[in-house]
Image 1 (cartoon, helix red, strand yellow):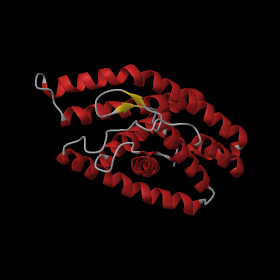
Image 2: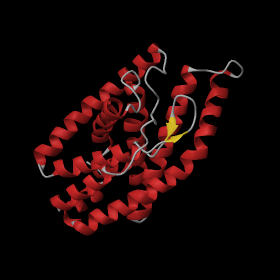
Image 3: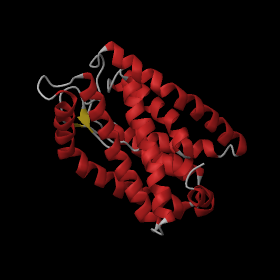
Image 4: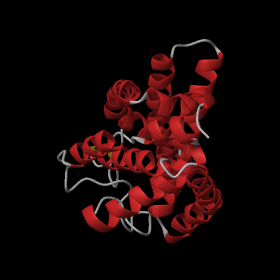
Length: 242
């Protein structure tokens, strides 16, 4: 199981990414809003660190699966399509980790993914790390986790629950990104509402098909992981994350 997961993670990391693409880019947000989103992310990251320590202490073998969901998020969120000024559309890849480990864990993994992309790929930036973390690594995973739990409670199959969780978590990330951009840059005519409508409308052109694609890919990955070692994952799916 360990060797196969490592191989799959390496193959994912070898996929090409667009070098010029980014999340909300470095220096794009006014300093006050950059600071606000940094402050907003801190409690989630603190709790997430505690959750990861507990997870590893209870079962050290989880390190490999944590590394895999991190690689999955890194690669998918590095595949960008130009969208609106100062940002872009891309899959997020955080739904898988939220389903397996819960949203608190993904707040840390997502932040690390975004940090590496900012430092190594010039995707996003350090000043906007708080905003990007809040939208992709906090809101996205919490929505994915909630949708997965709700779908399972309503009797949906695992594949349907995983698809809805990954796709809707992806879409909600961009709802929050649109909110972040609109509140920082309200339109001269119509203010926040007009700006939000503009941002989310343009994002939707590329993000809706991307969300559907991410949902389908996440289902495929979950099925592959289960086929390799269903005993390792059965506890995660039964609890819907830790």
